[in-house]
Image 1 (tube, rainbow, N blue to C red):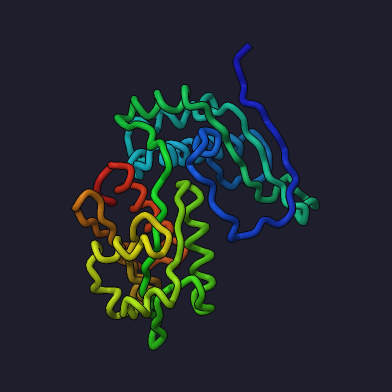
Image 2 (image 1 turned 45 degrees about the vertical axis):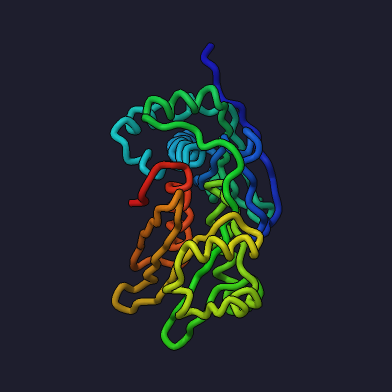
Length: 269
C-alpha cells in the first residue's frame, strides 16, 4: 500500500496579522510551507501541494530561482509524494459552507526528503539562525514623506505588512526607533543616500545584525509603488527594484531579495 501524507484538520479563530514570525532554529519550523486552497477536495489539495512544494524549496534554501527551473514541472507532478503531513486551518467564523471557502493548507516535510530534491536542483539547505534585519525605509506618496519607524502611527499598516512578508522565508526584522534616526541625522532624504556600511553599523544599535535599506514611492504612472532595495554582504552591495506593485508585494520582494543574497545565492532577479 503506498505511503500517504497524514491529514490534520484544525479549527482556529482569528489569527493576529502581526504575530511574530518563526525562527529557523528548529527543523520542524523550517521544513513546512503554507498556501490557500478552496475547500478540502482532492483536486484543490493537489494544486495546494504543488504551491507548497515551490514554497518549501525556497523557504529551506533561500533561492528564489528554483520555481523557474525546468525540472520543477516533473517535481510538481508528484508534489504530494514529498509531503509528510498536511493540515487545514478553518476559521471559526467560516463554519458556514466551509467546503467551498478558502482554507489555509499547511504542508510539513522531512529534511531527508526535501534535501535530496534541492540537491537535484543544484541547491542546498540554508541552515542556522537567519540574520535579524533592521528596516531603513523612506516612504513617499505625493506630499506625504516619512521614514518607517517603530513608533510612528503613519507607518502602522506598512509595518504589519512587512512583518507578514517575513513568515514564508523564516526571516526576522525590526524597525528603528525615531530617536535613533534623529540622533543619526537620518531623515527620509538623508536615508536614501546613506552608505549601506554606515547603516549596517547603525543596525546593531537597533538590535539587529545588519541593515536592509530601501525607498518606496507611489507612482500614478505605474499605478502602484516603485520600491528600491539595498543590502550588503561580505563587502559587496546588492540593489534590486520592483515597480507598479502594492506595498505588500514590494515588501515581499524585499524579503525574497534579502533571502536570496544572505543564503549565498547571489543577485536578486
